[in-house]
Length: 362
Ligand SMILES: C[S@@+](CC[C@H](N)C(=O)[O-])C[C@H]1O[C@@H](n2cnc3c(N)ncnc32)[C@H](O)[C@@H]1O
Image (tube, rainbow, N blue to C red; front, top):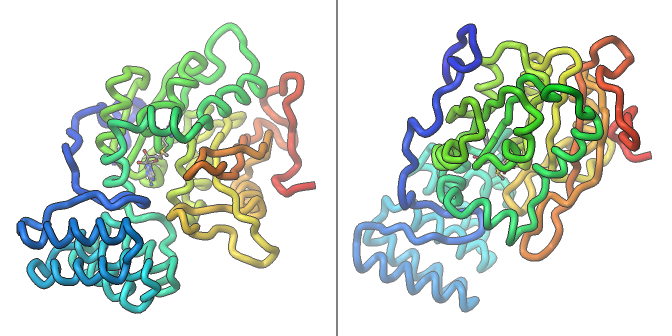
């Protein structure tokens, strides 16, 4: 992330300076995307393996992937496919061995092998998703992201956040928020929803292709490619709104994020975000890695982080984050405020807006 300087514009790199990698080879969390091994015969074996896997014969698919890897043993995508096929064939030890091989070849872990190992209990759960994995995943999705999410997956978090902010901070003469920071801004859907109410808007995202797409929309005053926790660490106070729409699902441990947000928010400023929900038994973990390769957080955990960082809950709502394979994904949209004066919210809520004492269910 850029170094610190006096003005906000200079703290963020201009959008689009880094070009997205076209045709970036990768595997998403759900689908196997073909990545050539550079060997025609190995590629053919791989393709047969994919076909066999699609037909449900995972053991045969694993055999073909293993045969392909005999020809190209340093092929990370092949090892990842082998891990996936072995897992589907209920060969957990074999899958773990294949995923470990992916990590040996690609320690940055753009395939998310560490997450897979954690899910099968063969490695500790990483505190956040590997940056290379998130970057590759969203570089791959960027071109299709808006249509895929909004139209096919019924994604509505940005508009829910914008709508609830209208209630919490009713319209006045000027912009409701002087300076806003959109964490994990992606292609800028939240920026679009919020723009007319914000005087100056910054966005940060790990994926160069997502940042380039946001840049093309021309709605951010400044954009930066980088990790959001690092971006926060490099920022000074001066924001009255920080948003993270469908982003914290790629981070388990949210302590650095909450600390960073609490520091950059001015008194009265609001932190608006969504999470996927985890039931969170008392004494249990505050966050878990789900089978969907995303992190889920408990209300209790969010409440303790808010309290530890002096943030007060203004509004907490159950929300459907998006649909996944036709099913609604349950989550929360949360609005925390850095109190202007002790015990009193800075913004008087409009009719119907709730001030919550906590995030826990009644
Ligand atoms: C599901 S998209 C949501 C994008 C946008 N907020 C929206 O509502 O459309 C998640 C975004 O978070 C970004 N992201 C995930 N982890 C990140 C991190 N640690 N730092 C910066 N961006 C991150 C991804 O690159 C991706 O663009």
